[in-house]
Image 1 (cartoon, rainbow, N blue to C red):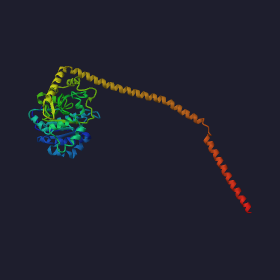
Image 2: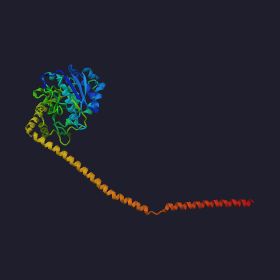
Image 3: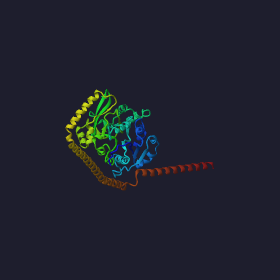
Image 4: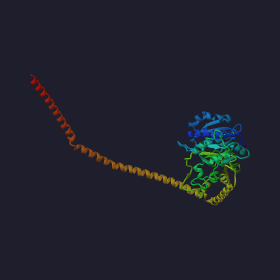
Length: 440
C-alpha cells in the first residue's frame, strides 16, 4: 500500500514499560508535551497512543495523570506482545521498542495518519510539535532531528526548579540547560573529548563562551525521525526507527528534511549517567577509523544526513560558529578521502569484536576450569587430612588414662572432707558426754 495522499491527522506514539520509565514519562514528559505549541497544536482526528506490555497496561489505562492529555486528544493505551520479534523469555530493549513501533505503524496505515515518534524520556522545547506540522505541510514526509543524550539525574534536579512555571522552555533556554548536563556518551563523540566511543554515529564540535559550553555543531549518520508520513505505509520497521526504516518508508531523499537549527525545534533524551553507550576512556576523541566503519553500514539517506551541519545553540550564531564550521568541513574532507576504507574497517572491527567475545569466553572457561580444579585438589587434600585428624583424636581418646589428676584430686578432697566432718562430730559427742558426767 502506497500513501500517495498526505496525512492530515497524526498519531503521537510513545512506547513505555517498566516502573522507572513510566514514572519519568508521567511526571516529566507528559506535562512537558502539554505545553504551548506541542500536543495542543495537533489537529482534530489526531490521537495520543501509548504502547506497553501486559504487566503495565492496566496501570497506564487507569491512571489519572493522563486526564490532561485526554482533554486535548483521545488517548489509546495499547497492549503489545513485547516478544514479537524475539521469542526468548527476556527480549532486549531495542527489540521490544521495535515491536511497539511495528504495531504503531500498522495501526496508522489504514487511517492514513502520520506518526510522531516520541520516547518516554524525551524533553522537547516549546512549539516543537507546531514546527513539525509546518515542515510536514511544506512537503516533508520525514523530519529528522539530532536528539542528544543528557544525564538524567543532574538534568532533572535543575529541571524541577523551573518545570512548574515553565514545562517547556524556549529552544535556546532548553539548549543552554542541556549543555550543562551532557551525558558521558555525548561527550565521548566530541572531537576534543577526554574519552572516546566505539560506535560514533555522530561527531560534535563544541562552541564555547569563556568557561561555559554555548552549543554544539553536529554531523550525524543516525538521526531520529521525529515525524514520518510513510509513502509505503505497509512497510514496517525491522529494527529501531533511526536505522533503515526511513529509507524504506520514504525512499526519495528529497522527502526527508533534516532540522539544522535548534531555534526551529529541539528535543533531548534523558539517560542515566551510569549507563554506558559505547563510551570508555581507552582513547581520546573520535576515532576516524571507527567512524568509517559506522558509515559503511549506513544507507544513502544516512550518508546524506552526514553532509548537513546541525547547530544546537543557546545564543546568536557568530564568528565562533564560523570557526567550528571550518573545522567540521576540514574533518568531513578527511573523512571523505578515506571513506573507501569503510568496509575494511567494518570487517576489522567486527572481527575484533568477535575475537574479544571469544577471548572473554575462553577466559571465563579457563577461570571456571582452574576454580573447579582447585576445589577438587583441595577436597582431595582435605579428605586424608581430616581422616588423620579423626584417627589421631580416636587414638588419643583410646589411650587416655581413666584416672586423671582432676578425678583423683576430687576423690581425695571428698575423702578428706568426710573424715574431717566425722572427726568434728565425734569431738562434739565426746564433749557433750563429759559435761553430762560432771553434772551427775
